[in-house]
Every structure is written in structure tokens, then in C-alpha cells.
Image (cartoon, rainbow, N blue to C red; front, side, top):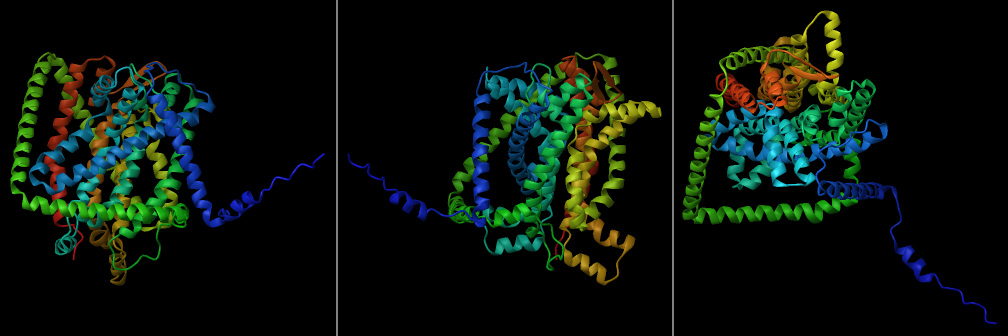
Length: 580
């Protein structure tokens, strides 16, 4: 009997010997590869759910095990809305900053849009998305993403616009001397200069998305699985335990985002700070160091990012040459824009006629009630701005000047800005009842919870953007106390402060729908205000009153923009621009 032959494993051993051995240097790549696989699997699962049939009445489970899944759904919606918001903010801000004719109506329009409450967008957005994707879950999901977008985008657009208007003259002259095309100017001058403001306003936008999540994930005929609908269901049932669990889950997600997204981005954005003397204390991030040590990231940057940037530069350089040679095409494009403008004016005229027809159907007492409600909310908004500015300006400057303090205060501010006011409302309401206060005072507190963070984050960005050489010059000349505030700090943060006040004002008008009207344990709590009118009209499906309230709110916002904010923006770009 023959002995069985041994199977040779030498080829396999040879293959194993040439494979790269795992080491500490490859650990970042392994972790990112694993994270990429997990992300891909999540996208596939979510895509399968979104492309499935529409399920309007989703049962929201209040079990602890459902919270991670709901947090993932909400985080995905917020991420998609943020990407749309960033693209819109850069495009809108760029056009408004460089087209004076467009700027005249684009900035007031932006102020109006950021002030219109989310519920005013809700009927149109949801009906449009449901009609665009009939019978599909994708329509409702995209509707929720667009509603979150309306709560995120406006302060980012204001920030980018204000940064473009504040670019020093010598930087623009250098771009002209080196004959930068618009793409080079955007990538090498404008985006770097606007990065710090965009980063901090992005943090505020994401926090604002968590704030309005309850209104965006659950409404009359639609309900989506997510943290917002979980908190709203818990509030409707008076389940304090589930409310606390939902808030704790939200806080955990915010802390993780802070560690893995915002801290690395802030540390990376420090290189775009305009200064001639390097600061001795700069923000740091272990995640950024982790990524910088990754061979895969370096290889991707070398093989993909750099060639793509070069191709984009060459492409737009050729486009500039073609555009300069073909004047006839520019004339054709001009006439095309004129035709589009005429069509837009025609559509606007038709909309005005329809609005007038709708408003004539309202009764006199409704207009009287609307006037009183507008005045009440206007006073609350301005009182909220004053109270918010009193503490956010000194605290924001302290955080911006001290990176160590920023590492502690930054996640705390994000958490505080992200917790929905409606989740805290029962506690606030019970405390006020015991102290003898009413919902009028409670609405001011809730407005503060939703709007003061716009001022704080912009002041932090402004304080961080002040060059180190100016701070050292102030110290050398012995400028301290009020003189330091008057000659260095306030002029340095002024453009950012104006942006913060504008977005806080719009956020206060927007948050009035939550602060002035609230459902809890089957009861409705409300106070006099235009936010309460809009919420009540939405519940009653009184779209005529909803439209009238929204138009009146927009009229007040436009008037305030022309009388106050436009003049302050002009002052910021003329007197308080950082240039030699």
C-alpha cells in the first residue's frame, strides 16, 4: 500500500511571506478601511429602505435597543442636509458678494427665508416630494432632509457672504497680479479666508438640525424613524424616562461628532488664519494626527486629489480663454438670463395675485390678532437678542482666545445648542409655574435656548480669526481692559458679530413656532405670538391663515433687514475690514 503523498504548502508560504506585515503604521489604514466597509453596508441598507414602498404610520419603539438605529437614521438625514447646505451656502454667498444687482434682493431674501419657520415650509415641501416620488419612502425622506436643510443653511450662507465681503484688498490685488481664474481665486483665496467662519457656523447648523429634528421627523400624516420622532413620541406620552434616554443618546452622538469631525476640522482650519506671527497655543486633535500618519490618505491625496485639482485649474483656465474670445456667447447668455428673469417676474406676479385672493378671504378680527401677535413676537425676539449678546460676547471671546478652554467649552456648547427646546419644555414650564411665571416668560427662555448659540459660535470664530501679531502688539503697547475691547476685540469680531446677530434674529423668529406653541400630555400650551398662530394654523390645516402669518413675518424681517442689518454689514465691510 502506497503512503499518501504530502501536500506541499510552499507556494502558499511564499505568498504569505510577500504580504505586508501588520504594523503600527498601517493601523490608521486598517481602521479607516473597516469604517468604510461599515459605512458602505449602512448606505446599502438605508438605500434599500428608502427605495421601498411608502409606510406613513411607522410605529416608534421606545425601547433602549432602538435608540442606536434611530440615531443612525437621524444622523444620515442631518449629514445629507449639511452637504446640500454647504453647496448652497457657497454658491449663494458667492453670487451675492460679487453681483451688486443680485445682492440687492438676495440678502433680504436670505434674511426672510431664514426667518420663516420650518412649519411654513412643511406643507409645500412634503407635497412636492411625495408627488416627485409617488408611493416611495424616498419622497418622505427627501422631504425631511429638505426641512432640516431649511434649518441649517441660512447662517452658513450669511457667514460665507460676510467673509467674501471682508477679504483684504491686498489679497484681491495679489490674485489679480497672478492672473488667477475664478476657480483658483475660490480655492486659494476665498475659501481659505472664509474657512474659520464656515467651520463654526457649520457646527451651529448641525446643532440647529438636532434642535428642529422633532418637527422634521414627525408631522401630521407622516412619521419617520429617528431620534426626533422618538423624543416627540415620548413627549406626547409624558414618558420622562424615554425623553432622558433620547437626550442622552443625542448627547453621545454629538460628543462623537465633536471628537471625530469638528475637532480635527478646527485644528486643520488653524492654518488659514491670517497672521504674521505664529500663535504659541493652537488647537490640536488626535484624529487629525491619526489621519496625517495614514499612508492611504497620503497616497489618495497624491494620486487623486492633486491631479484632480490640476485638471480643474487647467479646465477653468481654458474656459476663461474661450469666454474672452466668444463675446457673442456672452450676449446669448445675457438674453437667456433676461428671459429667465422675465419668467420669474411673471410667476411672482401670479403668486402675488393668488395671495391677494387668499388674504381677502380672511376676517377682520384675524388681521387684528395677527398684528398683536407680530408685535408680541417682535418684542420677544429683540429681548432675546439683547439677553443673548450680554453673555455670549464675553464668553465667546474668552473661548476664542484660549484653545485649552475651547477644547472643554466647544463640545459643551454643541450639546447645549443641540438639545431640542421641546424636550426641555416640560421642566421649564413646571419651574416657571412654581415660580409664578407664565408661558410668555417661558417662551423667551426657549427662544434663548434656540438662538443665543448663533451669536456665541460666530463670536468664537471672530475671536479665533484675530491675528496673533495684533494681540501681541496690543500687549506690547499696554492696551488692557476696556481699551483692549474698544481697539482690538470689538473691531476684530464685528463682522462675525453682525452675522451672528442676523442669524440669531432669524433663528428666533424660526424658533417661535416651538417656543410659543407646545403639545404635552394631550394638552396644548400657547401664548400670544405669530409663531403660535403659525403652529395653530398648521394643526387646524388653515392654510389661508398660515400664509397670511408667514407673509406678515416676512414683511417685518425685510423691514428690519433694510433699516438695521444692511447698514451694519456695510459698516463691517468698510470700516472693520482686516487689511494693511
